[in-house]
Length: 237
Length: 254
Image (cartoon, rainbow over all chains, first blue to last red; front, side, top):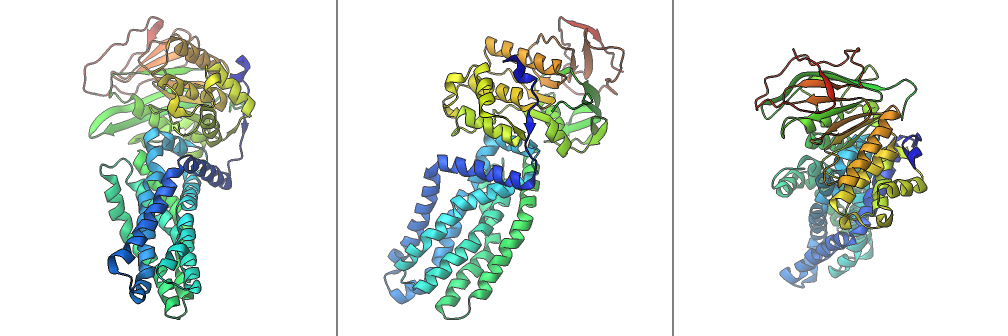
């Protein structure tokens, strides 16, 4: 028993991939432990989308026309609701300090956390969206485009949102401030995401919209881990 | 990891103010291998800020931190690889069990510890029957004990501990002191902020942040004046003299 203190532990390999993987596994497991939150966000998404046919009436031409915008706005709000999950509890219980002190670079941990967030919010939304699209009378090809645009767009929502969430840590009334910070930055994603679906409905080429979403995804993947790491550092100081 | 050459931490000219109020000015001290520095001071005297600065979580206004005699940028990878910081918060996830929390913390510390040794360490801190209980169901003291198990297993040479004995019972405090002694005996270093007068057997010095006075314990080699206060800062608040029985010599402040 006494030898415990004296045995030198084996070091793990401190590589960026391991940092991303560790953080992803940690956050994914934590999200799975409180599965209720994932389901709540999904139910919120379903309810908001379902409110529109009730509010504007069952006129199929109108419903079909507003479908892309409705699905995308609902997805955006639903992601917004889950953003505090990324950092708020870690900040409150002191684990964020420990993550920041880890020998793994904070940017890699941030990347893993954003990936886990998308995996437990954006991905389920994209998978549920076609079912809701049917409510609006969308065809198969349009449903495919909705899924594709959400698959490309929601990771960007997670990345931009993580920056906002990290910046507003410990701020009083932080969640509203975060929404004010993040929503304007979500506008391009909304325009290109809903635009892709609208284009496919109009029979025009929607590849340009998806390409722009993809470009945003690449840019976000490159820049956001560093931005989040810097924001976390500021919030902890 | 205990390196080949005995590691050392040195701090020079450290200055920090919070909210326009100077906490300390031109603070300088060193912690050598096998030595503990105990931080004393009234509430708000800057103990936590100093520890967070050593941990690289807070940026100093001025001054340098040296690890193994080379300057460390705050939050440098080298410092983070060698230091373990236990703060006020227990840094546990309520939804994870004791052993899952321990395993997670250790993997983010960058050390690879077998499950068997984690179980042993939890047994040593008195949590063997609680290891599969989620942290939410543990008492404050039991949560603290997970931190002790992490200290034992991490193998980091520098321990930065903020009120580590909070919520621990008498037996827990005794265990904590044994763990610190073992660590120092093995060549480790510790910087501990506490109100308790601890009977550590290894060389121990006290830094009073109220007066910025460094006190040396009898066991410490008084010959090497590696530690000294460059200047006494005019920190407001009543000057408080720390009386500790086994302090033999008080290094004079300028």
